[in-house]
Length: 346
Image 1: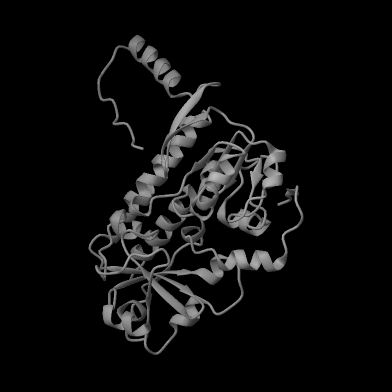
Image 2: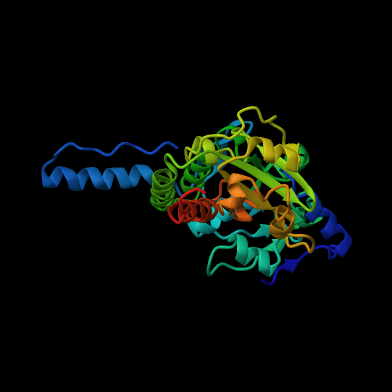
């Protein structure tokens, strides 16, 4: 992907440092079952369509990490410093004019689904962690969308343009991500498209819940080189338990942004039926020992997950863009396929 860069190129050292830093970190309306006369139905559909369409002008109210905020309808240009938001905007077909340069290489854009098909390339406005204030001034965005990695810069960015913190709530990734999609639909006049995306997510989750029911507990871990950490129900991987319905193998995991540090002895002791693994090294495109190599360890060979081939590698999206539309579709499929193809336990 070609990106027009308004500032000096980021050095390889900075990009590497940024990559190593990537540890960030709606409600659907019930169906109307009433029977109406044909003429009334037509009028009702027209009225509903008008209600759902975002105004061409004026303000729209959305929910952010800091509370409700108003935003001009159809803002253009916009700058986005969050991969989840980029993924959801792509799914809605919304063009983004200002993007984080270091993270928007062609491979990542394709792998994580960060750019709407058929839209122009964006202009560099910094990185996920550090904005280019000069580039932002040049872009003159009507709205800036940020996530947790840029949250501490919100006040500074707000002096240039209205800034909206869309950090996904790890206490309820499912509802928070649906809210973001719904709000983007309102802002950009794409409510019907947003409803369709949410329906896709709900249908995929329903299939996953069927597949996992009654098939054992699970534990979510992140492997970064030779370091491992476990994640509980209020983390970015909590959806495995709270949304998919997989019982937790360990109910006492300490909640922390980077997870609870663990060892092979811990994995032996907890001995989950299923082990869900994020390979961070692979997710951020670094070279190094893979998670699969790390887990091929004599201390793991007698665990249930290892013996029964029930180690599931979740998508890079679950680390880089958790709560995004494509992340839901990828990880529901990964988990559903793994459980549906599981063989009887040894």
